[in-house]
Image 1 (cartoon, one colour):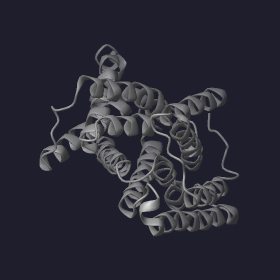
Image 2: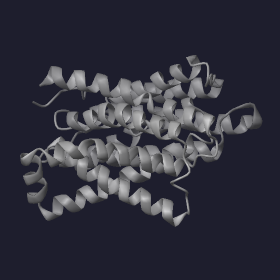
Image 3: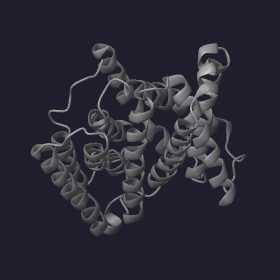
Image 4: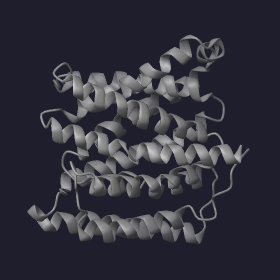
Length: 302
């Protein structure tokens, strides 16, 4: 099981690294596209892809029907948190660079570490605590440094704050998933959480009068591909691994996402985003701190 968890994590990290690239490509090609509509359709398509597995797998159907009420209510809360994560993070990519956005949104070990310490009894060492402090200083450098550069950078204070809030939601999402995945299969968990998230995002879009029927066919195709790559092979495979690894480790392995997304955004000719010095320096400090936050916590549970 340990080897399978490692393989699943590697595939999920590579897959989620493409999420920011899909979104930025879509926003570049169709700048009139609303981030909230992207968030809705990404989760909607992901839930749609999982639906046949639920419909034709009697064991999963039976499990969903028999889920205890308290567990189901927690899953509803996780779905709401996931919707908030996508709404905040995808919107941040409209206002800030891929590098800053994915670094800040994956800084959730700063939140996950202390919460898992007190509520999941996954104790933090002095080294882990030092890592959290270092990460916070890195976030400060990245956000305030880029904001001070004004028009000389792709970053904005609004975009960075949205990414930070999206990261906080991601941290809560990981903690909730770690708790529920101990007793609920990945198929049932993913379908319910993604479906709830889709409904919440639909409600948000309707509340803010976000158009959902004005996307081009190419835009729908890009979002559908994102649902397959980042949704199924990214989030869903990652959710499977949550049953077998600690919350702090599950959080820290996503360090590969900002590195992969930043390199892709720099290398791909239709994006070509060069990270600012503040992003590079602050990002390096954040990643170093996050590594220390999860150090000595890499034991897998069979």
